[in-house]
Length: 112
Image (cartoon, rainbow, N blue to C red):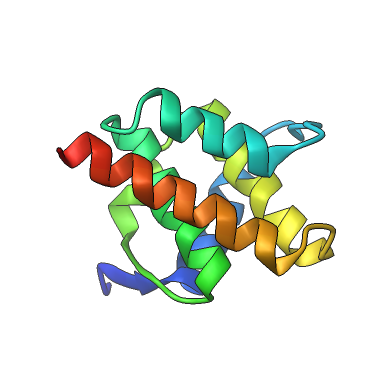
């Protein structure tokens, strides 16, 4: 089994894992994700979430299969809500790019 996945394959894996999770029902997953990343940018959850946000915004990225199982239930629900928001097209491209830039800046700050 190949350990490296594209961003789309990673999203499919996340959906597969989350199929038994209850829907998040959050009104602003994009804003919530940015807040979560900025609050704890060095956390593994935040790093994966930030990379996924950047991958959604830019339409590309690479992930390891193990990263999908590294997400806790709350973060897993959040990433599914993000993927659903992307699929529904309710947020502008600029909003996605701005969120990705904020996630990237938080990561740089954490790496110091």
